[in-house]
Length: 442
Image 1 (tube, rainbow, N blue to C red):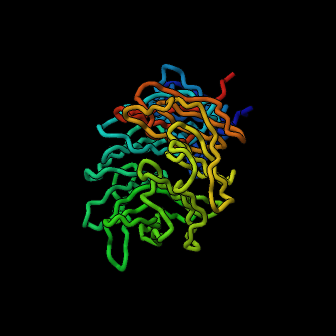
Image 2 (image 1 turned 90 degrees about the horizontal axis):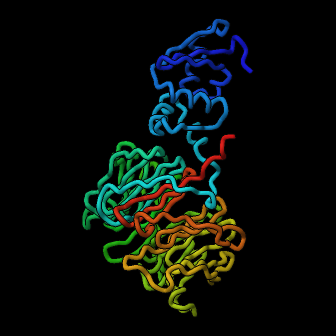
């Protein structure tokens, strides 16, 4: 309970509000209120004062209640983007973000809204950022959305097809493309998310010469700021390049060697626990699939699997996607029927233990198929199939729920971040947003 000298009065847009400095302190030192009550203002707490703020009073009431209770309630008559704008003015966006969503749970996700595409072309990738924003790549374009779903100007990569995109931090992201042959100026660029400015290009250098290459799948190691990218040279030589994210300088390169089939990798994933990089070349890019764990410390392939010479059926051999599950010491793969397979990383010669799921396709692929994709988030496994995403839980990965939104056609990619799931559809690059609702305010 506030006391007399703790009370503060505001006139916001002509409406009077009264609260306490104790409540306002919950906003933090970097907020509008933190600056207001800093000692440099020399306020006399013994004399109650009224401060005039020429802002929206309805939004101020919502934000003040958030500081009092930690809960966010947005009345239907207040547009969310207006509230976000006001929260940004007061330095309370982080408070709004943390209160807006409940703890992420794939089985409780609710459809929020769809965002229509901005340009023609097949969808390539969608990548969520932990603050709830996302990148959407298709054709030669990359669209950047912040957590309020405000678009920050599209980026056109000179009419070259985007192969992959990857966040570096909240302000920068990397794009990989097929470089114009002969230029040797790199097929990877680092862009500023807000301005779209190209900060620098990552180049492949061999014997002090820049090499032309097609840049493919991307991955990051945040601990030591490394960027990994699969590379294909002009003569179809393959390798994995490593660059310093901060300087853009090449620091290593892993060349494909006899007996080590890297191929034109579709997926890269850095594994913090074992300091290795998962490299996956998947069907239908190649008739055969190759999965490898590369140890850059020893310049060795620590683990590998290929479907060459296996006794699996044709359908089972067609691995469409994979993901490493470090806590389970396994790699999960999925085929075109959404059958899940698991490989034990503790065995150097990997073998697949398949677990049959409900075969929604009934043996027939659509005219324009979107192959299944996998994601692992907070102990739950997600797998896309046509226009739905399945959620698997528990030690045996039991199917517990399914997310489905009929508009937009098949899902070509999805991503999870900032307590949101983004699903990119094939038709006009529409993407859906799924959120876990916060607990009800009683």
